[in-house]
Length: 163
Image (tube, rainbow, N blue to C red; front, side, top):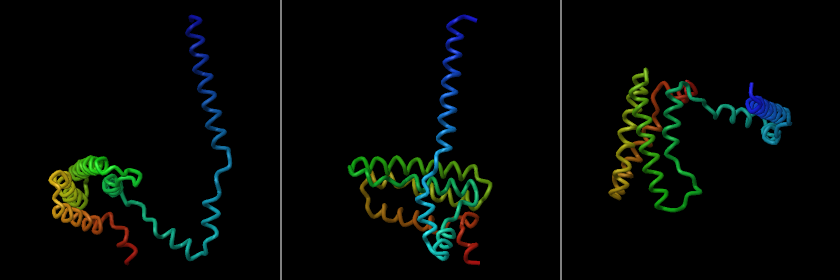
């Protein structure tokens, strides 16, 4: 083997070793217990309420719906109206495309129908923004809000709580 090849291999092994030590050391350092201590300072009833308030998605499709709807949200740090408008249009188009893809791929007909309906609503929002049609925007946001309040039955975690 050439000397250059041996040196390269030695450098690569050294780099891998350094990264390995760094990963191990970072995992061995004590974790921040502040959150745990705050949680433990709550009474039993409060702890129970927090535990019950978090409902994980029941399936990959349900998680996709949550992610796509949430992706339309814009950070409060963005204050430029033009940038906000651009982000709403871009994010809404991506969410509509993601939900349309889910509608085509989902094996659950209720999720597919819900996703297709949501996609059809979201795809109209950029056009309404471009036309500055406030009435149409209010109507579209109302429609998407109603869909979000009434998720597909297989994704509705509140049904188990009501029973």
